[in-house]
Picture 1 (tube, rainbow, N blue to C red):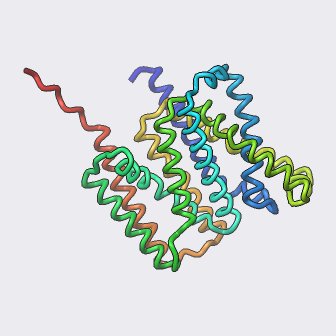
Picture 2 (cartoon, helix red, strand yellow):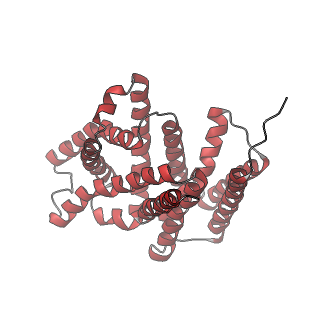
Length: 302
């Protein structure tokens, strides 16, 4: 491997660990924003992130990309904006209401949801290992449903919203940094109206809990944008298999936070559901690594 490739790989690894590690620490950040509710936190997260991304895109001299976005791509980016906003508000609600373990489960399930969406939407074929992994994931969800007395809606909501978000992003031919900025920009007017209406009615915590709380609410934009930018940098430098393996860092950190710091209950049935998900992910990951290292079939010679 050339020196430049090794440098790019090590840099990509640092970017990836930075992105997924930051996401793994989110359960410690969002409770600091109480007594603001999930909707208010989401609104501020969107507005301040949109302002930051405007600066970033301008600094990168990519504002001209906006003129080249077609109507179809604008619609896709609007869908992506709605999906990631839904994902964020579910996540904020989860970590601020003692459901960090459920959030971790959602991101453990997410890779398997992405595989299922590939089969349903893109008619991708499943091999035996992938099919077995999906069956294990379904069994885990059934066990968790029986244990909870209801489907794990938070976990499923996070997995499905982020899965469909990834599906939309797969077909958006826009620079990732520009698309993230556009997604925040499209949601920003709605978020700003929500903030202003709430402030006029005296129902916002933004300015009523001291300067430290206000500063943290503003910082939520940077806290949101920086991991996304690190992830975009990692995606440009790392193979997809390496990026996929790093992805498990986030839910592992979240699960550890929920169990050891949040002291959330983990009855045996819940551990069994998680164990089945982990086995499914191990099968899925081993299959992905094997296929990535297998040499391509030799071309037929006449």
